[in-house]
Image (cartoon, rainbow, N blue to C red; front, top):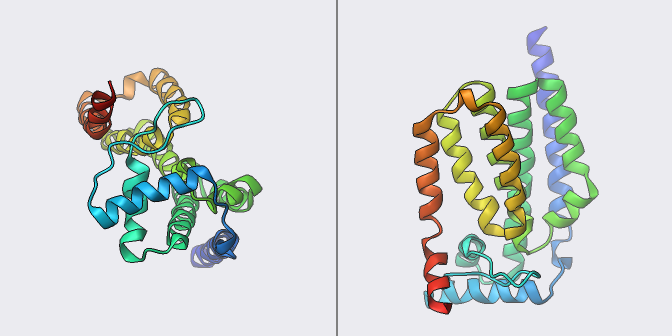
Length: 226
């Protein structure tokens, strides 16, 4: 009976994964290109072709320059091929991975039924699909936000302090990809306040130190522009 149930679970998970992949990878050549996309790709291409290490990315609509993590990520597909669509594929792949992570964390925390339902809703959500196909800072965010919240809930809910370090590292991606995502820090802070008795100093200290170190390039950028 258990083997049959497990087989059904795997079949449903594969079906949801195929739906998520199809919606995100089909006709990616139609991905939107505008000012933000051109600016991000130009910086990443300079990094790949000229070895010019980015200290910052593009400027947000609020007038604040974003940290450079997105440029390092976009350099990965551009190292393989100089075609723009490779970055769109990379973004779509990151979002398919976030769907898989949604299932993994949900199953661990809430069980199979909740995991399958949550993953299906995430896989077919129109906004999630639309943004997962766009070259832009926030469109890779779901990968890191899922990792951050998942690691946080496992660390606090299952009393596994080592996962809190992973949550801190995932928050690097959340914050560095776009400053608007700092609102998620409020959620993390609230969860930490509620479960403060389950917090351990060493994993948070290690994660916090690594989190701060990743901002060194951006610090030098800010110093250079005053």
